[in-house]
Image (cartoon, rainbow, N blue to C red; front, top):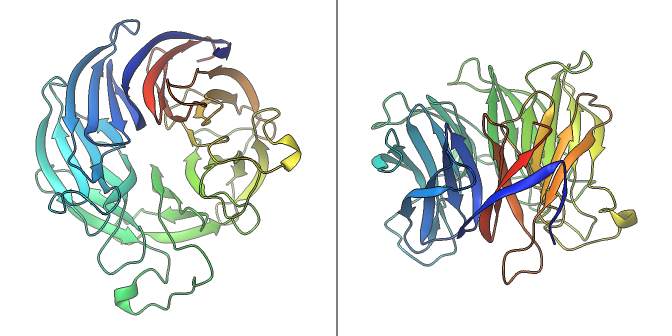
Length: 375
């Protein structure tokens, strides 16, 4: 049975599992994990009675498990799954007009080399993406200008020295995991970039054509989980500038206890300092190794004040208050029942709307709409 604290389930949307959920007004956009379903658009004006408006399918061998919407424009990723399927489809970004959500219209497709785009941020003008690119090893960071969504233009790119194989850079990671830009997030003139088992990087993008490195931290040599998301907090907390860094409980370098989230003091952004961590109570089991996908995955990129919802894989929705960043507290949770046919839930992403409702998607199946008293 589902367990809850300061939360209440309002409705479940029975749909294929997915990678991301995003709200624009009263419209929910769902990016699905596996083809043939790519993106589903749902009216949640009445959150107890959600209504599906449209669905965009994907060809065999590709998925679009991420989705962002701003200013009537929807951006979805096109990323290869496996080696079979429609080779002509190609990786990149699908750019849609969703001014009428029930009738999404493809405006253009921006194509990239190789596997395609994984995660990204989108502010209505610029997209901050993690594509594979010709001549490079792994995913890099790139900025696209969508001022004219029919003709997206690359503004700038950044990579770890050694990734540009075609440029003759020496590759220094023969005994380490390949570099992979995972998730760039922008705040102001900074880009906060997670780089999987190569940690995170803070970039100055005041000049978007020439991103400049400010600092970098990598915990993977000590902790075996990849760095998933770096979420800067807009307002100072306890007089400090704060960033939440989530490690993902997959791709462990060695058997270990589940992944957790870090809180960093980035007041001196040239020297980020970890000041606290959070793990679901009892989950670490004295550090004993556990299977993957038991621990942390992803914080909501939208949050209110100091209260941040997290998708915590098998532990469902966890809501943290970081008003005291030295002592993050769990103030609510919702542990859903596993989807039919599965032993555990696999909460993959969460977002919130202006009503304070949470939308929690399971990687395997379904979206829960959850009411909480803490948002």
